Amino acid sequence: MDKERLDFHTALVNKIKEWEGTADFSAGSTNRQKLNRSLNLLLGTNPDVLVDFFDINTVPDDPREAMNLIRNADLKTLKDMEIFQIKGLGKKLVLHHEIAANTLGVHLAHMSPSERLDVYKGLVDLGQKHGMDPRQLILIPDSIHKSIAHEGDFTGKKTGALLPPIIGESGSDFLKRFKGSIDVQLNAARKAVNMPVTQDWYQVINKVEESLNIPKGTLVGYETPLELKASASKFLQPSAEGMRQVVETGGDLSKGASQVIKETVFSRKKFEELDVIAQSKGFARLNPELFNLRAADPFSMAAEGAVEAAKTVRANPLGAAAGVLGGLDTESVKLAREGQYGQAALRTTGGALVGAGVEAIGKRVAPVAMKLIPQGGKMIMGALGAPLAAGMAGYQALDIITTAATGKTLQETGQAAEQTKEELRQQGVSEYQLRRRARTGRSKPR
Image (cartoon, rainbow, N blue to C red; front, side, top):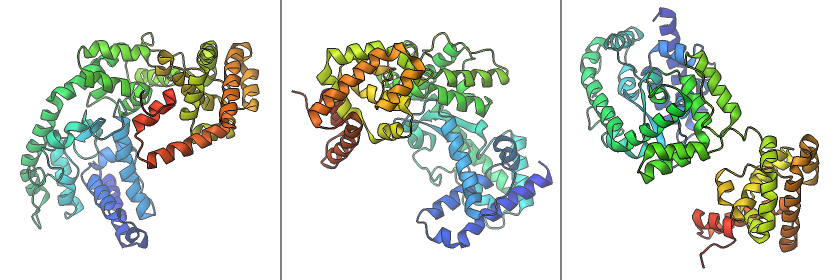
């Protein structure tokens, strides 16, 4: 670490501290938390990591912007490394800092730059990564994050991870004490990794790695380039919920993961991006054979499934209409107005197909595109021609059915459906009941 980097690091710390004295800071109820978090992240991170891994090497003029520079870099890293991006507390996967930034930051905040340098150098000599360094992040289930990885205490005060401050303590003296905190934090992290639920997830990830033709442990490895993990997370996102169900169900996890890989529609573009990055990092060419990459874009999706869509609608027009009534939302209408007819049609067709009871296609997120409005249909027809003819007929049937039943076109119904769903939510109708309504037209089973 050279003096220039340490000076930059110090200047960035001071700039973030300036935010506390601004009217903007006083106006926000959560700004204290954001300020402390960003300072701890910055102070708890080696300046070399900040520059080499995050390409952060300049100090913004605005203090809030400086704070967000650090905060957003950390949040993006955590998101990029999730591998399977799942929503929901207790259900998702999260990244855990083995050596938390706050266990260092609260102490280094009161030291001079030279004393902080002693701590950073000492940790390098120990071979210990810390703070925002992605090489010390472990992927674990959220369900055990607090209870196991933090031993039930996020603050670290009860466990000994967060040491009591000593005013005037030197960097070298603090480091001697901090070795005990390191042991506490690493032991808890190892317990979290070895938990059966974590190992179940790793087994699923191993199957993905095998299918991609990359070495076992790559996607959770400490030294795997952040860029590769981020690209893999984006590519694998469509399979995240399916993989969660595999882990929760149990049984043969490898077989279950293979089935999800087989049934999930992945983006060919994202696969190709991942392949390029993998090869640039020294990996062999990725294997596309086990992944369903047919849905590369709305047009190819349309050509592939248009005939199935028309047959589905004709076989169960009432179910299809119910699917549209419950499945359309304001986003599809917005997309149509912006001219993104292919994307909007995908959303519409999804509701129609699920409503019509075509489970196999519904699970593939309805890889079919049909026109939303006449202008959009003409644009798609002009690009694709005959393969979409059946799909067009299917959409027109839906439009006629819906208009006859409600007095509104599909586009108008989308707006009305979203309003109706919101009203039902306010009346206490659950999301499960709303999804059932979208599939069957009924909120309760007979």
